[in-house]
Length: 639
Image (spheres, rainbow, N blue to C red):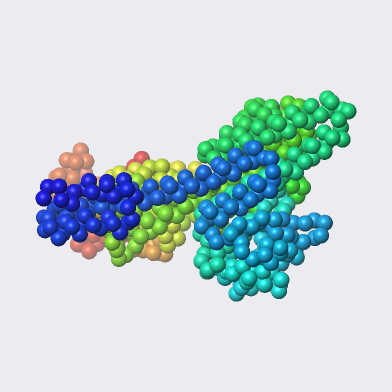
């Protein structure tokens, strides 16, 4: 019995790469053997862990296959000899990596003004392989015109693009149904389309689109490199008498190829924009700036001052229009673009004059920078979306399947059974524009993720779940840091800690009420927790749109004369009232607490009676006075 159905069996299943269904075997055998519940629970946990490991290994195998395909493509480009062989390899890898029935590539024929089939893989129709498409026709025409990927789950029934009899007949003879097309681009110019297609209706997921875009980028580079090599050979033949010029040109081409190899390797090993900038300056010399779409600095290599914003905007616009790097005085500008989207610019101050190949190095660096920024954005958006969806599910009611929520959280490195505080950020942090809202949510996602927490947008609020027990401290830190980012005061209400998934929804509601209470108390731009506001904060959390106006009116009507009297004469009537109520109405204990004589307390309370009326100590009036005193203290908290 001791060796029957042990966790080791799951390791053996992992070792032989068993199917997922086989992991039920040890549990079935254990139940049949009548093992005790604690053993069954142990096996259940071992099976869950084993399945997670299996899924992780499967994802890594799939990722390894994709990276291997991209690496092979890069190797083909590095040793480019025959363009047809390279393009066939790229199309074949596209079909293999996406698991598609057919993959093919069309290129533009500028002389005839149409598009022709260049390479196919998996095709069985001779008619399809000989297709020539009018410019703007079919799915490929839509891709070429827009410069963006397009996918259709059913080509024949899709009315988004212009159908022609010749194209539809070729597609029908091939039996294609679902088609994905991505543009082959050189700068801002579309030179063709790379496709993956299936003979059955099925959608292509975002990762598949991204992978095909990467392969299309490599294919465009292969075509461009082949063109450059052809131009180089022609130049060598025509300028055979000018040995010095030939040598210089040859050197620049070799430098471009070396830079291309290096930047491609940067992409494969996950390098950053700083690495690309360093590679460009090492090859071309000089200094370089990498800027984002807003003109903010991404990387700086060498001594170079940032140009005026207006100069950057004009030069980048010219670079995008021409599809090349442009020169403005001593600086060269290359737009960093993805389709029609402006992602930023590279600004180079070279030590020597740039020749054509040197400009291409700068332009390829801009292309690689665009890829890196898109990859970074895709990863950040995907992770932020997953984290945001988890938090949204955790604070929603009713809460379903807490075990599944715990499992999702563990995959993100979050322990839902550890103490967490919930922080709700007010509308004052979110401007009217969608971009400002997205910026706040992006900041919150990064802030929470860096601390092992979660963030999400919900009901017009931005909500953060942060590890720890200090709700007030967390609220103040969020209000302070986010105010610096937005340039405007930010209000943050917090509650907690919550120690279980079930407690998070209630904790969020309390944080939201605390945020409302801060507004009612006139404490916009501050952070606080429900504990710090006490029962008054919980009451004010329900005032909704009445807000600070009702609080001010209540204070004025209840203790306004006392507040005014203290302000004008520098007396301590408010302090005396707080002490009096704090000791349960004992004159002697109040006097002791205030370090004054009992007669002084009596005289002060008589003055209060003159200001508020003789009935101020009746139970209902006394309660209102105490509440007003508490509100007054909360409106001006210490430190």
